Length: 120
Image (cartoon, rainbow, N blue to C red; front, side, top):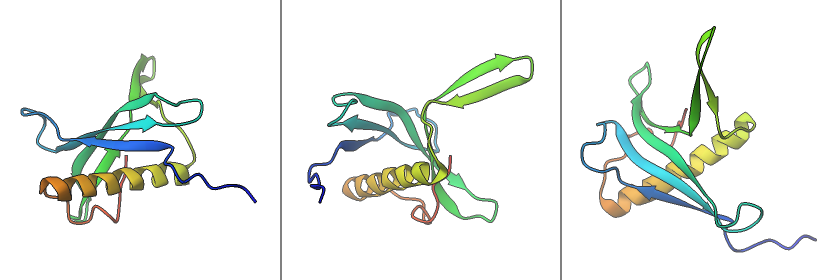
């Protein structure tokens, strides 16, 4: 039987944006890796935005770092973080959970349906 690691392998840090940030920007997020090949490194450039679905529901949108590339066919964006849809959804849910904990600690408002949907 494999031994389960009781220490987290990464830490999600949520930072409140500075004054003058866009109104819908809720937070900046970074992930610190504690073990493995990425130990000691940080993934930065993750942002949380207050968004509204077409039916009026409010939610937290999670965006990851991406690169803009201009070409003959117009502007395209390439995500720096890639994976299966389920893997990305799991990571986004963990990030939204970390934001909700941060917001409770800082007495910040959380969009009402944040737990139900987190989209790019």
